Length: 155
Image (cartoon, rainbow, N blue to C red; front, side, top):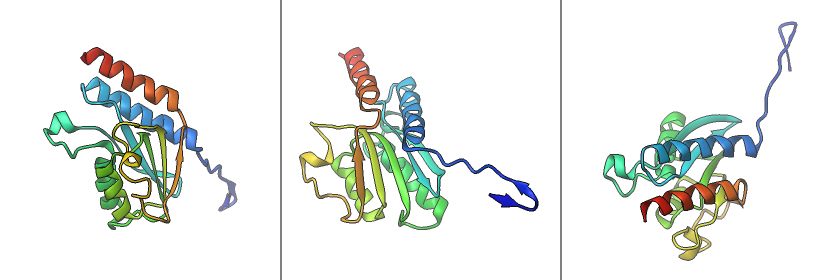
């Protein structure tokens, strides 16, 4: 990019970069003794929301990482719609979060680990908005491992 006689470097980050940041949010959740799931929402290559599970901290079963970032992103944008936004989350969204993501009309979701017991696909693989693009498996092993280790310590 060229601006006022100066060359400016514009960094465009990759999906891997943003998923690593979502994973860091999962680590924050784990440090708080919350189920280690982290999420961020990106718009125009900028993070507009970041968060992690807070169900224990807030004593609120709806305080999933996705719900936290949906609300924060909507407030940042001044819109309930998350058009042209990408959610990076370390675990496949549950049906509740998928419903909220449907109504937000988010453009894209990238999740790391699948949730074969409680993920949205266990109820209906078409729960998300038809225009929402879905990708999975990025950092899947790391995201699954932090969850397995968390629950192993609980048992």
